[in-house]
Length: 366
Image (tube, rainbow, N blue to C red; front, side, top):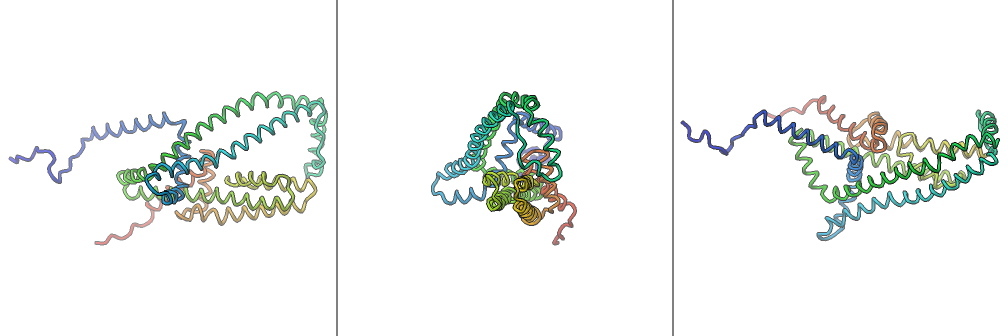
């Protein structure tokens, strides 16, 4: 009889886990994961935004860490970059909130005056091509007549002060709480990102092997490319069209440029702004300026959407433009603004799996 048959811990021995115990452990892990997701479901959007920002700003963070000497870089670098992100978002938000409050007060006063005397037809309305006469007739019947305008605008006036203030105020508070949680998560992702990435690589190797790490890298590259392709290119479109607005003599060209840059992040968003600007210029009598703004905007958007963005978003992971566009549009429809970045990342993972399963494996060296 072998005396060492029952001795535990023999060198080279592989102890197999019993099947019931393995199933129970997996079931417990699945239950805990689902329970954690249910507890955090209100904050998952904030966590996802923090992850997107951390991935997009990680190269900048590494440069900042290298520029800071001493042991303080573990706290100082994440704190500086997180506060900078907060300022980039908070300062325009506060400015917009002040302007909206001011404009709302003006709008309410405008409604009060309009209920008393009606709203005269603007000079440019009859000159609108195609619909000018119909719109002029409707305006005179519903808005220029004080009695008709009082009934129509009275409902708007009764809704604006109470409904909008209550709903918008609650939404702003909720968004600010989520944004604060996003910044807090972003700080810890910067501080512990290196260790977290090492743990994620180890987990993917255990679960999926080398394929899991490769898919993860493709998703990260897709997020980086999407940030560059959507945000930076959108801001570039806003700058170029802002110059066109100034040359064309459009009122408030800086505000129009800012709105153009923001909406240019969303596919087909910029044409809404420069199209409205072109219609306004044409209605005001500057038909040539309106046509020039529309033509220049169309050329800028065409070049950005068909040449620059596909290279920036899909070039790093060889993602075809069709799948880039479907990922952006589908992600936007499913997850909102966050889907602009999650959609291409998911498409990159799917394309990576497709290539892994369909492309012939490299020959084995015997």
